[in-house]
Structures are given as structure tokens and as C-alpha cells.
Image (tube, rainbow, N blue to C red; front, side, top):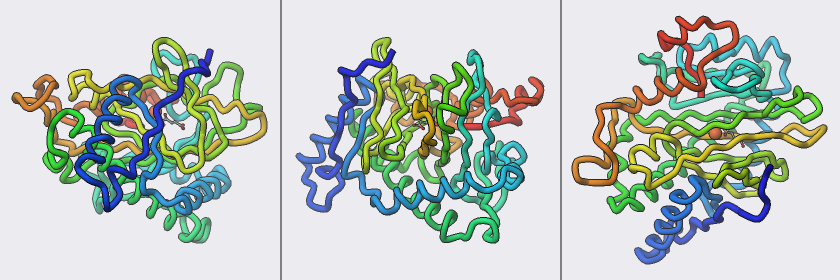
Length: 333
Ligand SMILES: O=C(O)CCC(=O)C(=O)O
Ligand SMILES: [Fe+2]
């Protein structure tokens, strides 16, 4: 059951981001973020720097893409793409332990690189052909939002780093070429989901900072807090921020990675959202160790953590054999 009395903290980022921010006003935001992510793993943010027009254009772009014929979407399937970009159909991913596959469909882009780089987190993006969807209706608004959400993810990382008592520019140590994947999601109306099916089943995010845009008025996200599910209202111009497992582990548990899930309860209305997962360099290891922070030393890199997580939780695709999964050929966010 969802609890209605507890709400996620709402943090105003202006005293940190605005040009006239002072060291004192910045320190206040650092403390607010540390308290929120330490307690809930999540917070809501206003004055985050992503223009409202860009958010609206992104939502429209996702809606437009999802309306193209199914065969055209499947032709861009992320299952065929070596760096996991493109279209994920409803039922393409399944979390171990879930009763049913997710109802959602999604489209992924990431940091573009000319060639696919092993183990397959960097590579070229997939875009619909302009005859199908003009660039002005998908590629352009999506790319510009991607850049803005990248900047916000960087700011949040810096806030979290400072919350651990380090200078924000420690970030540059592990973000020369960070993995930043963006997942644009459509949840079908409740009337077209199966009984007991979730839009996205309960999970934690596995990596770094997640920046989430929900289409205003289309509620559905719930966050676990002390054994209860707290609904997170989908508010206009409010971003939802959360920390993934890697941050929880790197911070030695100072920050939480909270379980969350999505149920689109609207009978006849779809729900659009967009999550940006801002991880770090593939070869980076915990930057907070060696007497510099609370985390534990370990040889695991960002790439190790990502591969492990994809295999254990998100990677059992319908029709894919376990051996293929074990070889790490099937990755998804
Ligand atoms: O769509 C949402 O509100 C949340 C999506 C999510 O949790 C995810 O994709 O990891
Ligand atoms: Fe998530």
C-alpha cells in the first residue's frame, strides 16, 4: 500500500546553481541533498536549470516516436544494437524474481562514440530516419535535453561529493568520458496492462545519479521508505533525483539507493517519463577511498559493476539463452 503522509524532500537548487550563489548558500544545498539522499535515496528538485520548454519538447518527442508503426520501432531494437541503444519493446527485459515482464516500452540514447567500444557501453546512437520522424520532432529536442540533463547530473554528483566532505572537482577524477545513458519511456494505460503487471517492477538503480523527468500530472512512481511505498507526484518542472547502488557502495552507505517502481493507474492515459543514468568512467574505481572518504577500497570498476548488475537483475531477455547472458552479451538499463 502506498503511504500518503510521507513526502520526498523538495530542494530548491537555485541557491547552489544561480550565478549569485554564495559559499554559504551553496553549503545549505549540499547539506539538504546529503540529508535527503541519506534518508530517502531520493529527492525532488526545483530550479534545476532544465528549461520547461525543453522538458515539454522532449515529452512530445517521445510520444511521437512511440506512435510510429511497431515494425519501424522493432527495426531499431536495442537487442540488435551492440551498445544497447534504440528501442526496447514491452516485454524485452525481465528482472529476476519478477512474476511478469514490465509493461513499459523505451528508447535509449547515450554518449555518442563513432565506433562501438568493448564491452559495449559506448557506441553510436540510433535515430529514426528523418522520413519517418523529422529531426526537428525527435532527434533535435532529444539531443538538446540530453545535454541539459547531462549538466544537471554533473551538478548533482558534485553536490553529493561535497556532502561527503570532498571538493566538488573530485568529480573530474572519474568522469573524463562517463557513461551517461538516457532512457525515454512510455507506460501504456492501465486498461492495456495485464493483471498484476507493473510499468516497471520494484528495483534499485544500479549506478550513479539518476535524473528523472515525469510527464506532469501522470503519477505512478513510488519509492520504498521504511517498508512503505511513498507516491512521488508528477509535478510540472520538478525533477526527481536519486542515487544508485554504486553511490551507496562508494559512500560506504552514507547515501541510500532506494527501491522504486511504477504503476500507471490511469485507465486510459499513457504515461511518459525519461530517466538519465549518469555513471562515471568505465575504468573508474571508488574515488572516496585511501583515507579520503567513507567507502571501502575495491578493485571493481564502473564497467565491472555495470556488467554484474545487468547480468544479475536486468538482463534476462525473452528468448535469450542463459549462456548468452552469462557471456555478458545482453545488457539493458
Ligand atoms: O518512469 C519512472 O518514473 C521511473 C523509471 C525508473 O525507475 C527506471 O527506469 O529506472
Ligand atoms: Fe529506476
